Length: 121
Image (tube, rainbow, N blue to C red):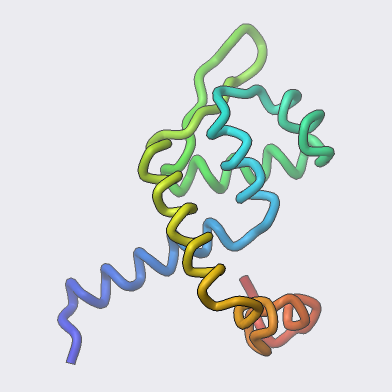
């Protein structure tokens, strides 16, 4: 039987990975790894709507992954823990390479399942 502390740690890890569950958020994180950016910069570089970028940045900020500072009338966003984030993403890339297409073919969380109502993220 798992302890309460262990269960809480698993729940926290699931919440963290849920923060990474959207491709747009991953793209934003990868772009912020290059340095600080304003929302307008991210919308131009990534081809996403301003509202989409703002929504994802709010999620990432709420998760403690990014922070912002004012610059004139804009906010400049940066990663809070860039080394740890890059280590995690590199580990994910290694694991994905080892599993091949298994993750994308998964009937529960794979690409085909993304269009169904079975799984909510």
